[in-house]
Image (cartoon, rainbow, N blue to C red; front, side, top):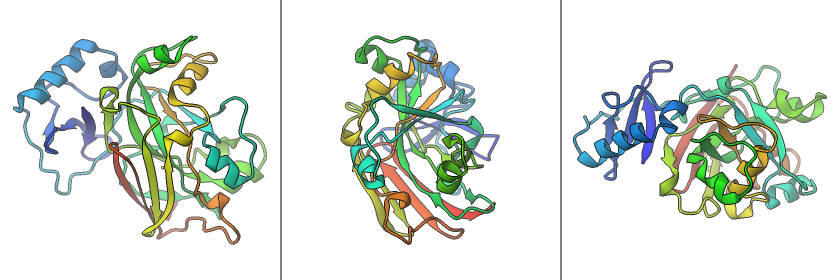
Length: 285
């Protein structure tokens, strides 16, 4: 299933995109799309039955805002330097273990919402990423099979980053990762049964129409299954938690000088095969 949330920010209602690409209203079946729904097999069964019935009300998608596909996100765990080609372009050694940092849930916006360039920023960068949405509690997992069984679905994430704040201002990466609007998510939460192999997904990103990133999850240093298993050794993952799994080569940081960092007025578009497409206009904070 392709689950999404539509409507004004803060007032989104649940919806789904059916097999014919028709947008349908789910608000009469479930109150929202969140961790509680993803952990409830009976509720998900009702959603599937309603989707297959073809009787859900049709929504007019024209002019309708698409919000983040997941409400009440618990935590966003991010994996840094997780693509061989991205490590090479930035001159970094591939990590021996996954590099973990966090984004606050309040950085999440809709896939086509405005992204704000922080005040004083000169190094705002783009990063298309595969987001993994947790649907079952995960702690101390022992195998990749157990890890994938905890995954409810996948989504497109844009891990917007401010490189000066991240790298040059001391401390951890978090200052460059948690600026307002720095995690567009969606358009859809695609349930795991529709993604036969999370290591065979194409990722692309354009800036002002120019292709900048053109990669594949096959380049990941640590697979989706290994990332979920590994993270569960250090923290408990709950339904509604999200893991951003890293970005392929092509970010501004990896380009020759002068690096083409983002400015107000730029437009970024990104997509992952089968998971949908985003478009954001950048404006000053």
